[in-house]
Length: 129
Image 1 (tube, rainbow, N blue to C red):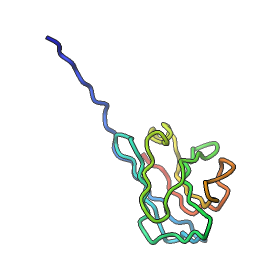
Image 2 (image 1 turned 90 degrees about the horizontal axis):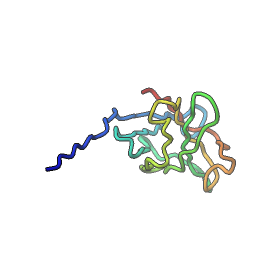
Image 3 (image 1 turned 180 degrees about the vertical axis):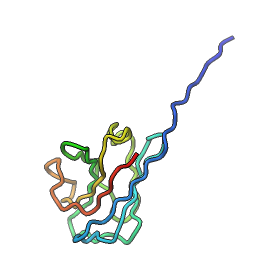
């Protein structure tokens, strides 16, 4: 007779961040919502207002901004619909509160060629866990 105990990891509260359009940019008055489920398996980025006019040959790139140091790219996101970022693209520090903010910049096709934001930051939101 064998008894197996299965222990499920604790579920954390979901993380929700509102990224507001920055004043003086085409995104002023617009917003994105970033949400991470309690199990941390994915982040969903969803615009909550009108589609952002990007201009031809431009894309949006999402950044994790630590309290100190350089931002880290989390990948490209859609300007007009939901984008799901799998757990493999999320830094552990983001899920543990080691990220001060999320930001979105306008970049050339394929994203930033330098590994840092090169275009204007059009959305930003502070992380509060």
